[in-house]
Every structure is written in C-alpha cells, then in structure tokens.
Amino acid sequence: MKKIFVLVFFIPLGIIAQETIIDTEFQKKKNEVRFDILSVVTSGKFGLSYERFLGNDFSAGFHINFSNSTKTKSDFNESSRNNLPKYEFNPYFRYALSKSKKRYYFAEVFASTNGGNFKEIVRSTDANGNDFYETQVTKYSDFGLGGGLGYKMYIKDAWAFEFLVGFGSNLSNREKSPDVISIVGLNFGHRF
Picture 1 (cartoon, rainbow, N blue to C red):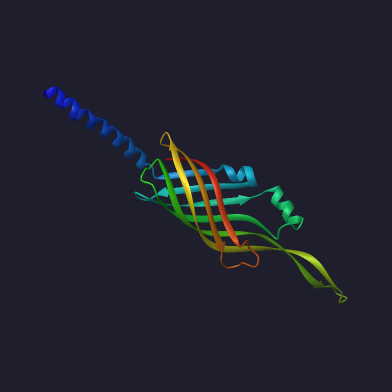
Picture 2 (picture 1 turned 90 degrees about the vertical axis):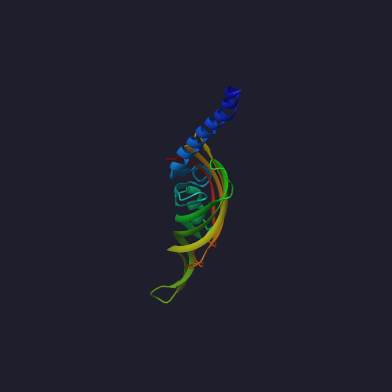
C-alpha cells in the first residue's frame, strides 16, 4: 500500500517539478531580437526589433525600420505619391493577453519617430520676373502614436515567430508626413 501511495503521490510531483524547471529556465531569458521577414519581401524595408521582458505580462522594446524600395522610389518620382518614408523608430510597450508564456496574444502601444522625403509642386519666379512651376523635394520628420495587436509563439523555447498589425497617426508635421502609420510584420527571432 505504501508503494502505491508513493507512486501515485510522488511521481506526479516529480513531473510537475520538471515542467516548472523548464518554464523557469524559459522565463530567465529576458531578451529577444527579431527580423521582419514580411516587410523585406513585400516592400523592400529592413526591420529589426529588440524586446525586453519586464515581468509576468509586460515587455518593452523598439523596432527600427529602414526603407530602400525601388518600387516606392519610382512611385515617388512618377508623382504617384508625395512622400517617401525613409526611416522609422518605434519604441513600444506590450501586455500579454494570454496566460501562456510560449504562445500568446498581445496588445501594444507605440510611439513613432519617422522621416523621409516630401515632394510638392511650387510656383517660382525667375530673375526676369517669369513665373513657372517646379517640383521641389524637401525632407520631413514627424512623431506619432498608435496601437496594435499581435500573436507570438516559441519553438524549442528560443525561436520566436510573431505576427503584428498596428496603426497610428502622425501628430506634428501632417502637411508633409503620411497621415497614417501602419505596422504590419511577420517577425522571426531568437530569445536569450
């Protein structure tokens, strides 16, 4: 009877203890670096993210995005668009909506510092007093706020896959910068 009691009581405790040790090891990994695969494929942007896990459900980090797309440049040069975003720096704060640490939904709020080129047609006057129209390209920079939702999962407690959709609005230089900030990403990274 004592042997059955030992088997029924202590073996499950040992299994639970092993799972707790594995989860504790995973939670000791507080840093994560990710690369945005979707932006490279669809729009020629290079995106890199860093995230620091702060506690049970919170994390903070930043996303850096540089654009060098020939399609976007040709649209800008052919007058299909009047602004050409070049860079974005987006610090964010996240809250995990699910209780699992290895597969979960999250909500985030972010700020955005972004800049690029702005093109407009202006009326100019030459030295002889003749008026003419010309295309003038200037640089812009702006600051915005927004929010997003996403899903993250881990494979082998180290490799992260993340899908994120977020939208915001630029606040200070709306005449030249894009009105809407959009963040759509399929990220792959490593937690350490």
